Amino acid sequence: MAGFYRLLVATALASVLVGLTLVGALPLRVSLYAQEKSVKPGINDAFKNPDINKYLKTFEGESREIYQQRQKIVSVCGLRPGMVVADIGAGTGLFTRLFAQEVGPEGKVYAVDISEKFLAYIERTSREAGLRNVITVQGSDVSPNLPPHSIDLVFICDTYHHFEYPFRMMTAIHKALKPQGRVVLIDFHRIPGKSSEWVLGHVRAGQEVFEKEILSCGFRKVREEKELGLKENYCLIFEKVSSDQEESPKSGK
Image 1 (cartoon, rainbow, N blue to C red):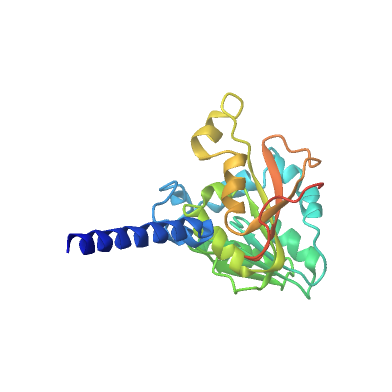
Image 2: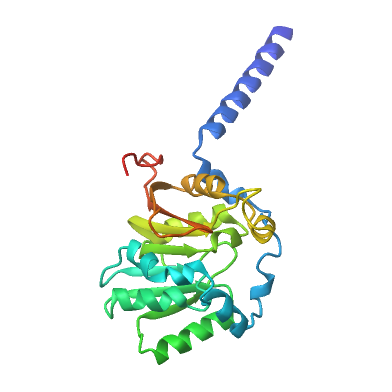
């Protein structure tokens, strides 16, 4: 009888070990939905009722290098007439309106933001500019709320560090993209001893961490754009890969 109980215990332990092994072997993105805690609580509080005039000066001011290099940034996106683009964290719509001109009346630009006031401003200014291909979408903390497999290119400018649930958000973006759809990411260099105190206090992590997070959600890095003349920011381009494709960065680009 003792031998029987020892066999029973051994079998149970073996089953547990096999289960743990299988769990450990699962792709990282499968476990991402378990993420429950915000990585930066309260970072988006200011956008619940934003002062539009204040943010116009911030987002579209001549002192912002993103604004200075806006045409070059649009160029590296490689947009063509008829494409469908999502501007995630569209803010005052600076790039939304530029993208809308590039994709033309046959294309679409989804302006995604968590702020109703920003979206209302984008809708009004797009209409005034005669841009009928702009669609405003109120996103959530965990999703851009876009139709699945509908987007050619997702643009995330100085917004990724505002994602409170980055894994869930990037997984939702992955689902919204068409096969081989791309993500253009622009965010702040965060380098202790070099970056400003504002960046060090506001941006939770640097380029290497953000890259790893995005790669773990079913993307591969295509290239880094270093010819934009950006000093405070970096620009990375990623491509959606399916679950059976290698998720490591492409070489030689």
